Amino acid sequence: MDTQSRLALRTALIEQAVRVWFTKKDGTQRKMLCQLRVNRDVGIVERLRELEEICPIDPLNKKAWTVYSLEDDGYRRFNVDSIIMATAITTDESIVSTKEDEYIEAYEEFKKSL
Image (tube, rainbow, N blue to C red; front, side, top):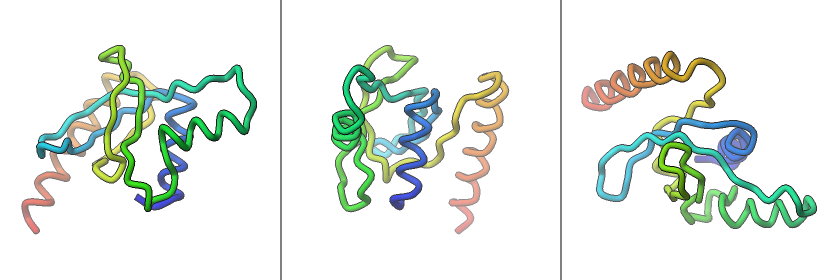
């Protein structure tokens, strides 16, 4: 994932909940509703340092991102380069999830055809 895409995803995670589909190290796929939890009581420089530590923007930095899973009520990590798709949740989640699941299925079928 390039720098601009990483920055856009990190910004979305700060501002709202995001549903992320990714491939785990064992090869299985997982979807997670997550958000970034950032200390808003510190200055902007400290906040940017914290963000760069938990969600690095540089594509050469292969460190896993740490996010807060809203469904599991706890912190989880994933490799940003393993993301299949990410969608900000801004409408009725059940409608969005259905469309996203259809997209993932279509994407998997497309990959098999290659």
